[in-house]
Image (tube, rainbow, N blue to C red):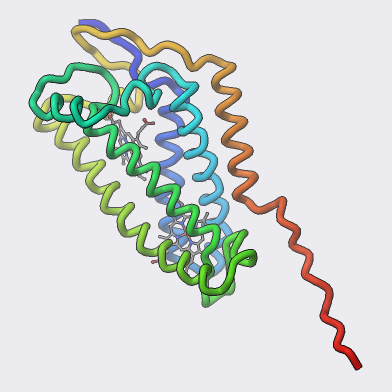
Amino acid sequence: MKKVLVWDLPTRIVHWLLVAAVAGAYFTGDKGGSWLTWHERLGILIVGLVAFRLAWGFAGSTYARFATFVRGPATIKAYLAGRWQGLGHNPLGALSVLALLALLALQFGSGLLAQNDDTGFAGPFYALVSEQVGEIATRLHHKVFDLLAVLIGLHVAAIAFYTHVRKDNLLKPMVLGKKEVGEGESAKGGGPRALFVALFVAVVAAYGASGAWVDKTPPPPATTAG
Ligand code: HEM
Ligand code: HEM
């Protein structure tokens, strides 16, 4: 047996920040009222984290790359038949990773266009769309969260299943990075230059989503003739 690096540090930091930020977004969204200011900040942080993870899926180290873990149906079938050996996300788990990232994107995407009726608090782009679109986005924001909560529940249940039934502890590598294996190589790549690029993508995405660049000066009052 030897110890190999599976999850590089940025992947782990992003995962645990995401867990904390999503928990915080749930808490603040549920409380509503003045908590929505923090809800927005956490939402923007989540935009940055997801953008980082997407960029890291191309620039990061071996097992963090989409090319390593996103597989076709044939590999998923082989995995289900017990004929798959590998490190990192298994071919089926990879689907849940993609689903989690996609639902998070739908969640913050709809949040950016949503509005809270009680406080008038609105996402940064609410004012740019029609009232009807804003309403649909707000409804979507509620519905997608329910789906996301189910998926997160399944995600945690799957990890508990692997740990207790399959006797494969997935949690330890997501905390400490390394895993003890019979064969397999440590993750390679994801050096400082890749980190810089992914951070840059994350900051640009978060800035874009914050709406700080949108001109918020109200239009001049309409002059009425006569
Ligand atoms: C992935 C990130 C996000 C998560 C997990 C999340 C989750 C939630 C939850 C659970 C609620 C309460 C829903 C309910 O009471 O049933 C909520 C409400 C809300 N969220 Fe988010 N949210 C996220 C991102 C955002 C972003 C980026 C914005 C933009 C500012 C935003 C704007 C809002 C607004 C305006 C409400 C109130 C909607 C209403 O009163 O109907 N959210 N969110
Ligand atoms: C808000 C809740 C959560 C979200 C949005 C989330 C999201 C994700 C995502 C996107 C990945 C893929 C990691 C990557 O490739 O970068 C992942 C993996 C993982 N998550 Fe979570 N997660 C959440 C909660 C948790 C919790 C509470 C635990 C602890 C029990 C956990 C443990 C893990 C582990 C161990 C992996 C690696 C799985 C593997 O080896 O394939 N997650 N999670």
